[in-house]
Image (tube, each protein chain N blue to C red):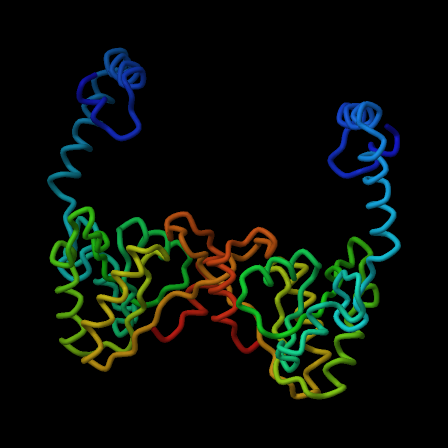
Length: 188
Length: 188
């Protein structure tokens, strides 16, 4: 119970329920869970190219010859990569920062994989770096920091579009969203 | 009670509560409400230029000499105009369509104020038409219809930006939002 309770979103009651489930379940299922947890820690690591979570090295995306290696999508977390990948619209490769700059939380640029990104770009062959950090204060700060580091390379730097989310109503949009939408308006 | 119950969002219980409030309140307050309702119907009408709701003609925005008359923001409803106006970022003028094209609901282009918009643009002096319909299927259909009608005028037609709403997380964005964000990415 004490171990389950350390997991996020698991309180004392849930931990008790999970522990009793393990006691009741057959030995095989319980050992399968234990093995899966151990396997993840032993076999899953960060891709040496893009820092995504992977069991192979480089990861399947970096190792895929059909991907456009000249276009790097920069995301904060592996789950953001999965979200973009699920759209099927990204033909380039990724770079996972493993977080965002947040000085108040003690997260400095050196804690992220920004150096690795800069090395990749400086190694050449890159046409476009698409910054796909979250449209939040921390994500934007991280984007600006990366932009300043890459400015001297002359590589094209773009950012995901911000504006009105598809399917929404102007009536319920915040001022910040409307500002992005007005200032970012485009030829139609 | 029967009259109150015809209002949107007012059920039988609310109608009863409102009716008893009118009975209890002093005569002056009750008559003020009655007068306000009558005044609105008698004095508020659509601006002959932009079709916004107004008590003056033209409306205060169309009559304001400091506004850029060369830039028209096209919205579906008066409440969308108010929402954009509240940002303080629009220096141009507006055109209120009074709805959107929705053939399934029997709303045809002729039911909107599109003819008025086309006349305004053809009268000259317009540099940019910013289409600010909702980022919905109906809003987009209406935008495309307007675009096709204005194409021959050579006026610059733009549309509010779509993409990730500021403050959101990539992780929770729908595929449609991510598609707008990826395809609409811009130089950063």
